[in-house]
Amino acid sequence: MHEWALAEGVIETVIQSVNAAEKNKVREVVVAVGQLQQIRRETFEFSLREMMPENPVLADTRFVVEIEPAQFCCRRCQHPFGFEAIAEAFGEDEGEAVHFIPELAHAFARCPSCGSADFDVQSGRGVRVTSITAE
Ligand SMILES: [Zn+2]
Image (cartoon, rainbow, N blue to C red; front, side, top):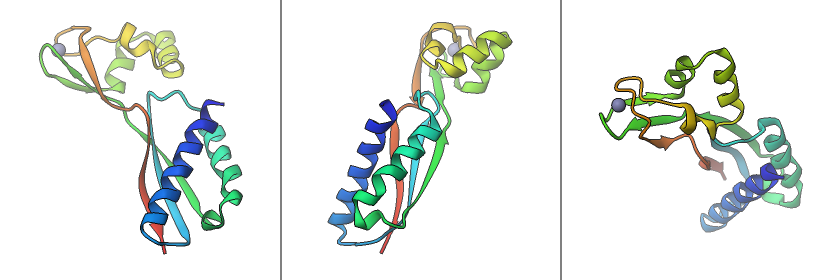
């Protein structure tokens, strides 16, 4: 159901900007989904497709869902690092767990440079519409 709510938000955003731009046909919408956003991509894409027929402007729209990589930055040494650096630090099992339960990243992860557990998540969360092609 989480995916439905997110898809609804995406559709609303698209409709609003299309109305504002006085366009009436949307060709393509690119949506960036954060790597740490717990989402089933298939369910999300399905939700978007299911909502399209309700809006004539979206009748022929192609939705492209891209995964935005997570980016972290250490608060102690300012070292920037990605999800891979964290996954590598784990054994196989924990790496898998973090992949499926991204909230665990904060519990397990350490800065690969200084070992601090104090870091910011700079990207990789949330869902954003990154581009709309309309006419
Ligand atoms: Zn550090």
